[in-house]
Image (cartoon, rainbow over all chains, first blue to last red; front, side, top):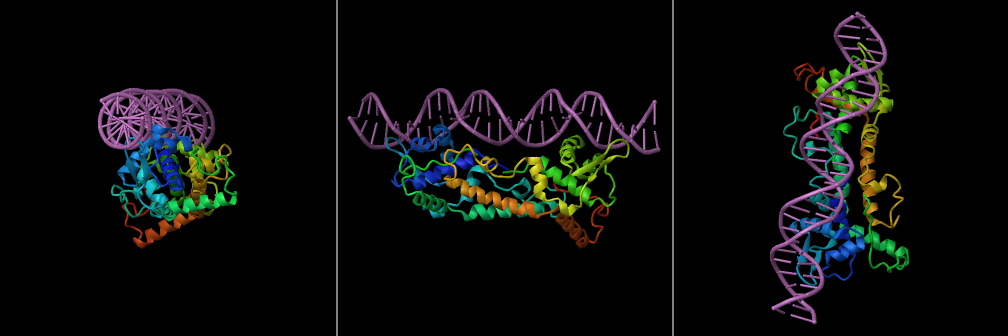
Length: 160
Length: 160
DNA sequence: ACAAAACATATCGGAATAGTATGATAAAAG
DNA sequence: CTTTTATCATACTATTCCGATATGTTTTGT
């Protein structure tokens, strides 16, 4: 029941971009350094985000990535489902359970469905903007310069 | 984010026991046959349930297992956590995140915590008795003899 | 004694995870 | 027009986890 690094790092990447005030194309190497993650690994992850249209890229010198939509348009669920494939606790709920022996009778599925709904409710209700707001509120609470770099970079938790 | 077979099969085992009207010690082989699962694999799983005191066993001829407590005393969360170790979506929430670089600052953890709470709310609120009730309600709705064995065995979904 | 069943380990193939490694392509700067 | 920076594209790999099998040993009622 763990979210993989792909899912978590993807959130971290997009949140890092959202918190970057320059609102310019950001080289992935910079994000990797800020977050203390492998740049090459992040390339694989951001490639998926790129193909899905979640980020826009410019190649070559002074290139990089930026979010293609406003932060309120991304939910945690969108990002996680893109990377993880599905967030349902059992396969049965992914593909209509067409191969089940007793379709519709299985009482366990009723429990899994409740769990699945609860998970979806949470991840679909939290937007990237929400997380930005949480971060800004925390920065303010700390006086704005509690961090060694004055809060310019927001190193996130990446230890699963 | 998937529940493993150990967690799901453990639920199936305990639900199978709960639905068995004989209220006697049930040989695991019988459960394996009813549920269409590997008996040897179930032995490993039931061994954990046994050590945790969730089931009681009698060895030897005509031995077997039975639930050691009334069905309302088992929650889905108890069973799943026993088998899976933890249901939290990130490791960070398991051990107080003592090794985090920016403990308490990390804004992603706030999101993971919400998800974790939602998951716990669901699994801790569903008891084995609830699932038994759901099954009995369904049996009644079907007239009691819709199944080929008159509803005596309740084959559950085990396809993840 | 025998058969049925719990109990105890060891082993194992496959898949997923979490990355590295290597290189090709593109574009701006000097 | 070369160099630097960066995206883009695969290939590879080491480790862990999953989902079992396999091979017994021990207990116990008949």
